[in-house]
Length: 412
Image (cartoon, rainbow, N blue to C red; front, side):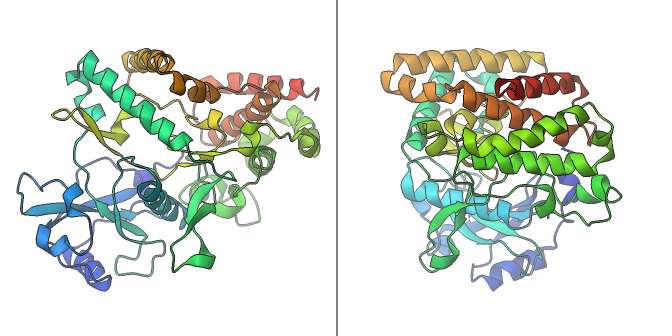
């Protein structure tokens, strides 16, 4: 990413301001408010400690752990957003958490309150949810035995299988249906991607690139999309817009590709098909590394999957787009190698459980046409979202090679 997301967070809030927010939504005042000392790119986080009795009307208390060992108290989490992504990010995560609790047994926080606007006492979007028990696996990874790791992998397999039982008609995120606000009905809404240009990126990278004022909407595609080809078309058009206006791409090796990409866009409608990969979409977390998974060693259970803000409904081969699955969130080559050791073990366990093998085989592109569409979109994404930011220069040649390979498949 360009401007580090954490650099666009609001300043810490006075306790009186947080109390005013809680008063405004009818949530009782906590016995303590403490900032959570974690590295959070998109939020300020506060722990709100309540007596169990005070929270009884608002949440399912039997699912909440005691606060710091005190059985009479429980914690809520208040996340106050930066203004990186107007509305979509907060609504996407809130809708996904709500949908997961209504339709699956996957352990996730319970939403207590939220606002996708800034019209409130903190002047920002926010989400209040329950605090889940357990520890981030990334924090205790070095203490886990192979038997515990196998248990975690099997539990993750069943979580992925449960998600795979639910199909969605379009590619996107989740949102609350504006036509059915009273029922809080959930539908497929705008897509959100961690590679998008955030509002904090625009002044730094686009303030002098064009006479037209660029916005989050003009620089990113939105959706939802009825088909995979519609999604590819919107993404490619968005990337080409950036290529057209940013100086780093105007005198670059991308220039000879532009006529071929224009021809690619013209041919896209004729490239649409009706395979299961193109018509069936599945909810995916898309960033399922061990810092986002809580685990209780005493019970040997995964206790929560966190941070669904960039999750969405995708063709199944895109369930893990940045290869985050099973990463222990530690830097260095050893961590990289350990991730792939665990992934190999995960697939082995899946093969030993017959039902899992058939489903998880869908994680690969089986149709070269679809894989080539993906190559074009993903390579162009890599070039146009990283070159302007000066990121990953070591990968640029590979992206151009993949772009060439994808276009060549269509004889372009």
